[in-house]
Length: 262
Image (cartoon, rainbow, N blue to C red; front, side, top):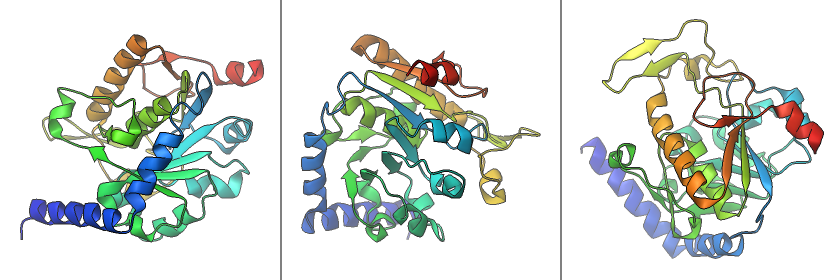
């Protein structure tokens, strides 16, 4: 059986199972209930880049934050915990030990892809919200952005793009990115070639398996560029408060100044 056929079967199973057990309909109801819940407020979306430190996370304890993937590996060094958590790549959640790590996260809600229920997300403890996602390679050239997550969101390049849409759904007016270095040890170029970025660490946690995995930052940039365009048209703003890094598509803000002003 071809790989694409297997994937489609898993997606269909996920749709069927989340409909049968009622988890998807409960998720849609929840998403509708949090529409504009944080209208006019600010939030911080925490990335897993090497610039992320436990010290900065401690400073974010009084802020509303989103985090993703293996963020739990930094928990032993900080008492900070995210308000909301997201993992939209079922292959990440299906890796050995990751489900246990995700289940250890104490947050208001964990957002996952409905389509990944069968492969990985059925093993997660509540609270879990299953979000319908739209994925297609065409979105790299013709991006789309959802302001109503109850109808679904678009996945372009990274889980960060999904979290930005969730933040907009909740009504946040100012969205600050932290730990978004946008540079990895190995870059997957658009032509399929792989470029090694010497002396670059992919994540805040040293993990050779993650480091060896090439990342298509050009795909992330396609989403980020469109998110910036939508933000200017729609009245919310996205800022990059990362210490250093290579993400220049959003206006830079100084993290210390933001937190001191608060």
